[in-house]
Image 1 (cartoon, rainbow, N blue to C red):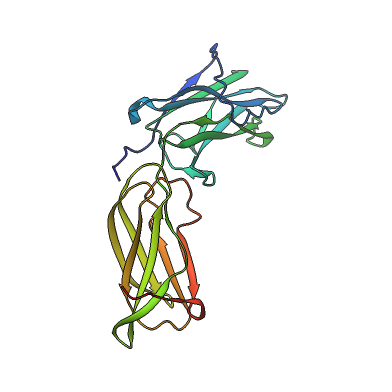
Image 2 (cartoon, rainbow, N blue to C red; image 1 turned 120 degrees about the horizontal axis):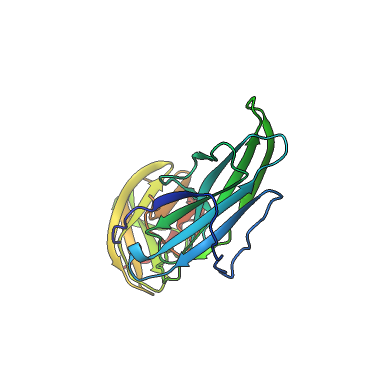
Length: 259
């Protein structure tokens, strides 16, 4: 797997801008009574530096308030995965309007986006009076910026199998893996644990689209459960993370065929 530059965020505070929202065909922006989150730009590209999104939050002053603040949170989903919050410079910090401003807008530019992933922001809006007491609070989500791209999907095919090993106390375990994605993945790791103790972590190298492979381990006799986990550190962007772990009770271990 190639190393990707970390996601970078640049932010701009603005008083008034005429910006066009780019429709994405994903989830629509949620507009609160006095605050909104918009997707201004969603740019695709072959190079990571060319893949970017610009999000914009806007809020208007409310009666009884003298201060306005907004805070961006950035979310990412890869393939069929869940939306996860991302740590990046400029997000999850409050941005405050200058005194006397009645309309406050702030935008953030996010670059180095992943292929096959999607991005959105959630914005929290807060209004405070002169004594620092919160007058009002709102939350809005932006539309989604989707980045097309093919992904690998290294997965464990079925339950772990067991057979004779070097000694009766050290059986041999076999785990079958399969790349059901559309691109080759490199430096795939496979970890096997028996009864909660890690036996070994094996590096499989390259796994081409559609390729299947059986990986062997020698470990202790199972008393409870065997757990096989591919990509144990979740470093590979893939179609789904849901098929990366298989837990096989010892009583359900299938015999390993000779050869």
